[in-house]
Image 1 (cartoon, rainbow over the protein chains, first blue to last red):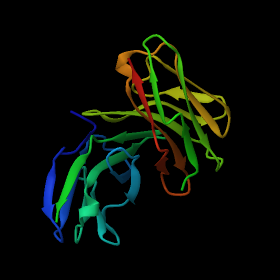
Image 2 (spheres, rainbow over the protein chains, first blue to last red; image 1 turned 30 degrees about the horizontal axis):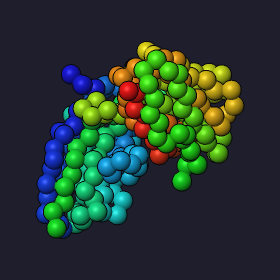
Image 3 (cartoon, rainbow over the protein chains, first blue to last red; image 1 turned 135 degrees about the vertical axis):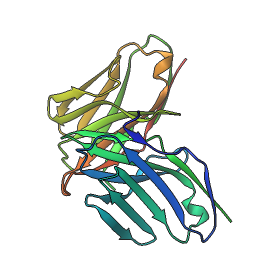
Length: 110
Length: 114
């Protein structure tokens, strides 16, 4: 079992719709969770971090964390073609260890 | 902008040659990381540093060494490059202002080993 799992996609959504990206992790002691966006040929860019159970909203983005189910998700409201990218989930475990999923490719169709 | 600069950004080399990638940061961050990114594998940690001369191995450290003689520079060396080391290499720094610290990445160095 991979430590951080994501569906590779592509996830295709029409413009204006809500995109829902999911991530599960295996290490129960994980405390911090991050979502990165990566455009093709570019470096990962941090878009959200979440540390407590529940929802955290930032503009069109909402991160949701459920530690009991070891599940973290990212919702993108009013999806735009410019949101088309690969979204990486990352989990922080221990003092230095950040584990990344392989990413979900999102395509927003105009 | 986390003030991270990687060099070179692109390099083509031949099997068996040594290669050094440089990561330079301007904001005095204590933690620095080297990752490689390959299709189907995501980002995998090669080495990390928690201070000057303090480094440790990640999950894919074989064939790589690192050095950190100054806070601002973290060097990744491939002593004898192999084709399996063709990859995109990302340096990251850890911001420690939050509960766990967030990673911010440099622009990447694309290495091709022929």
